[in-house]
Image 1 (cartoon, rainbow, N blue to C red):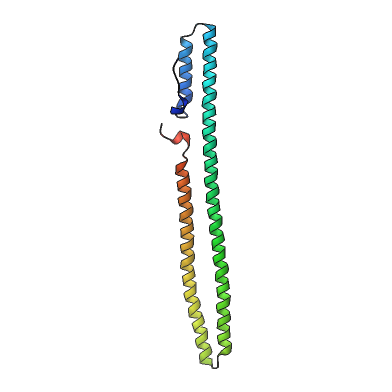
Image 2 (cartoon, one colour):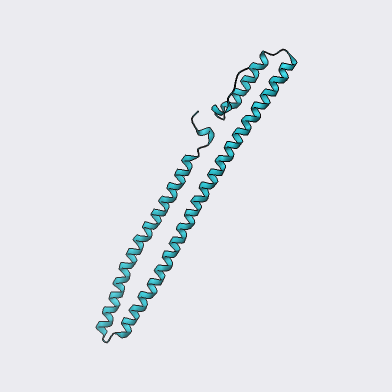
Length: 165
């Protein structure tokens, strides 16, 4: 009988090789006991192959689920970080506006009030530009991290049929 090793064949080759070994075994059999033994061996090998492939599939599914979970956790962390940044920016906006109002209220002349107001507008323009750059950098960094994590996870767990024999 031909020895068949299910671990060294691809998913598409395993049934063909098993079937061919079964046919070869049947061609040489004329005794009913040998036929029963050959059939029993064929079924055992098929069950072992199915068990091994199922276990491999389970391991890969578990690892893939973990990779997806990690990517989602990173995504949620990124959204939470962005929300904290927005809350901090809103707090800073209110504090800056209150300082500007205090300066306007404390102004003793129209020129002093005008200067305080234009200083406030200039400061807000600079802060807005800085926040825009910061937000763009944060989004870019988080998207890059998520993509890298997904790519690394995807390359670690290629499907069995995709691997080289």
